[in-house]
Image (tube, rainbow, N blue to C red; front, side):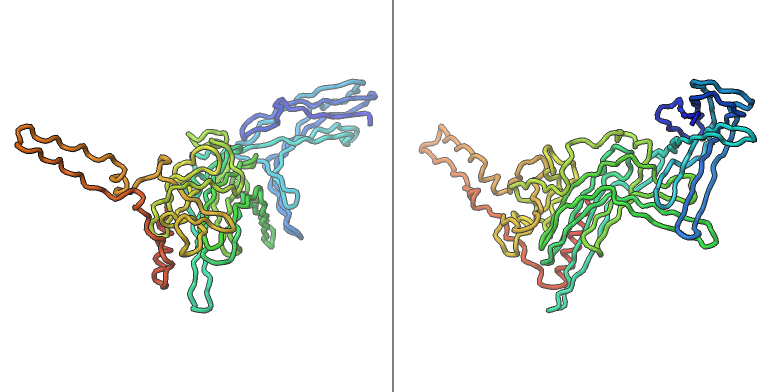
Length: 443
């Protein structure tokens, strides 16, 4: 080979947005002098989709050819440089690559022409287009809360048990490098141990406009966290996903490829929560472009339990600020703590003594009141307060009158939490408990 061609972009990253100018130069290395008839450059942007069989579609965004050298000449040994430039159209989709079903690709091709315009040598190089997506212009529901109910039947008395899977995302708009926080809660009153998994998923749909319109959906799990499991208990977890370098959602200006991202929470095949999230290029104002604050907790790590009993309302869900899954306080509204009645830990057998912990499997955590201090019952506070001082006897009284004796409050140790609530004995009571659980979970 007597010729070698190298394409060099003036932008080292070779990344552009629509409307910018692509500039660079072609370096032609000649080993032995060669007679040529011209040097040409070709700029191309296109989408190609192939979904098996005849399902093939192509969309061309631009194709431009220019002659960098159109006269016959002899190239002597050494390096020869030819500059090029091209202004991109404004409405272009972001670059996208899938090895199996299609791509959105932008290329620059340089070739040397011989006699009769025959291509003697050529090379091709890709560059990247990123279409800006401002997350501040997108309206979404934040925070996003999802609920899923499941039912199991007890054959002996034909009564169903309700399983409830809940998830909350404080934010659903991200740029690459940020962290998505996910809070998960699961109520499983059955004896079957059910694991809970949280996944960060990318779904790509490829379309064709052939005579027989076809489509293909590709689901890719970008990251998976096994949170834990629940058996006859209530459990809660906090986890985070770091958003990698991804193309923006929707792939704007492309008719044949659609990209979407989801956080999926899975308890079993019938209980799946799917929360859509948006990946853009311009972060939400006030959120910052970096990862979220605080250390990243290990997936599925349980929060440390607190010794203070919670409020014990209905099914006993204390949803105040609970302990964080890692060092440092948890953010407000954290679901890392559950309270199952006064002083009863999650997972304890029905009728167990107050404060009994769960046996096997993950525990639902017990939260403290806000501020991290135990709240005292009114009577216990009165007992702990110092007694009032005795009133002095009047000076003019003929006889010393004994000072009034202050009322003695019950001792603090006599104040015991009420007994844990007995399991519901009827369908109506169990349905009422589920309603309280659902209402209490609406944060």
